[in-house]
Length: 381
Ligand SMILES: *Cc1c(COP(=O)(O)O)cnc(C)c1O
Image (cartoon, rainbow, N blue to C red; front, top):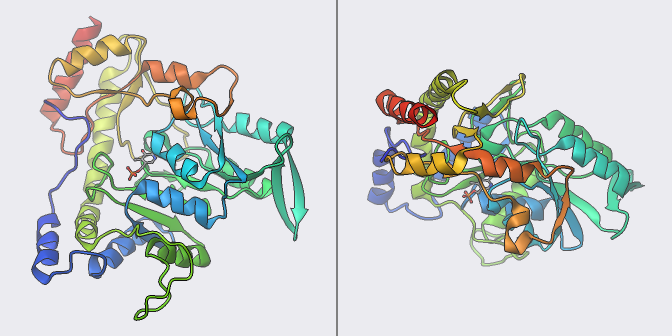
């Protein structure tokens, strides 16, 4: 079986994990957590990176840090991995889903802008804008865009919306380590951004996440709240309801080793992407995800559109090539069915029905990639 997207464990992972085991530093203290945070800071150029248990936890904590409560509305795209919405649901906030763009498969920012212009009012409170929805009177507590497949969104426009309306921007950049817009890394534009190191992501620690922020106060609070909100190194004094969401040292050790190899992992991802684009262009009715010309996406998971998605999926999976359909749109899941959904033509559902992801692991061999390509070409003949 040629796998869809698996970790590439090819460096010092074993040695660093062994170091943790040999020294007994396996749990919540130890040097690798700091080293991993530093590696992410250096790579992304963000001022502060705070390691946590996984991406979902990072998103949940981010919402808490920007002050989202159950009285608020949080905006998110309708086509994303379920964790984006789950993180918001934990806060108790209402969720407003925004449809996506047909070409980029990313949240439709024009649709968001229209909705804000027609359905909310903005007041200046203590010299800061605060935006509330007209009918419910609820505050718009955050906008949480997603870098779908590591593709780059029009984040500059979102930053502008965020400041005009006074709505904190939290970037779900969990799929976007290695993605840049105009030379600036994904997840470093908003008040916070979040990375994930789950097994299928571009690098993996087994499970893990990182909160990115350029705001010192948010960074301090992020560390505090993810480590039980303990105020004293000795005494068990905690000043708020914290979480035990820390990343353990053993997993951070894997992360440090993964980051040492990141440039070569990223390079392979881009080679795989280019070869697929070259070979699959014009094959059947295949259409690719469009990317902003000012962006440099990480090419994490190769996905394309075809009207024959279901039959192709069956064909490839039965030929030892692991493929996956896209995420079911959030408004089709039982727990999120009744949410507000801002759309004109329900593009999410159309893209969901047509998209297929194909093997894109950074350790995919060229031979195996050609096997995938020729099987797809055979299917369309
Ligand atoms: C992976 C992912 C997450 C969650 O990350 P975990 O580390 O698995 O909790 C959130 N949102 C999106 C879009 C993801 O792809």
